[in-house]
Length: 222
Image 1 (spheres, rainbow, N blue to C red):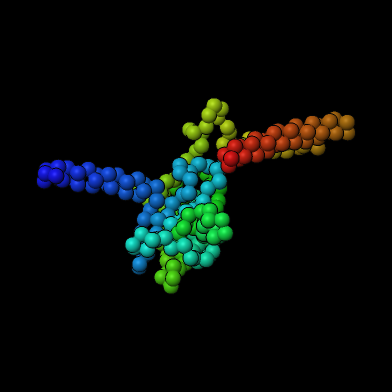
Image 2 (image 1 turned 135 degrees about the horizontal axis):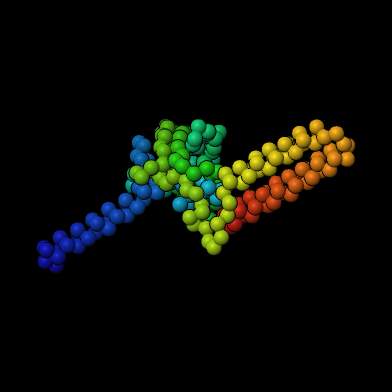
C-alpha cells in the first residue's frame, strides 16, 4: 500500500473513532478513577418524564475489561433536580449469573423522572478499595437532561403529569367552593343536593384523571 493510501486509511479510522467517542460522551460522562474507567448516564436515552428509567454505571478496568464482581450497594447514587433529591440508591449489577442475562460491568438504579430539566448524579462508594465520589449534572458534555415526552408521542398527545396535577387542583378548589356555598344555604335539601353534586362531580373528574395517569405510565413502560 502506498504511503498516501496508508495516510488516508489512518485518517478515516481516526475520524470514525472520534465520532464514536463523541457519541458516547454525549450520552454518558466517562471518568477514570485509579485503575478503573466509569461511564455514567441514563439507561434509556432520550430520557422522558413519566417513563421508567435508571441511572446506568458501567465499570471497566483501564484495559477495557468489565468489572462484574461488585456487590449490590458497593456503589450508590443520589439523584437531584429542582431542589429535591432521592435517598442514596444502591446500584445493582444487571448481570444474572444464573441465566447469563444482563451486561457484565453494568450497574443500575431504577427510577421514574417526573419533571423535565437537568438532573445531577452523585456517585459514591468503592471499587475494590478504590474510593469513588463523583458528581455530574446533565449537559452537552455529560449525559442527557430529561425531556417532555409530548414531542415523541404519536398519534395522540397525552396530558403531562403536570397538567393532570393542575387539573386535579382546580377540581379540588371547585369542590371546596361548592361545599362552602352548601354550608351557607338555608335549606337542608339544597345543602344535600349541592354537597352530593360537588362530591360526585369531583369524584368523576379525579377518577378520570387517575385512569389517564395509569394509562400514560403503562404505555410508556411497555
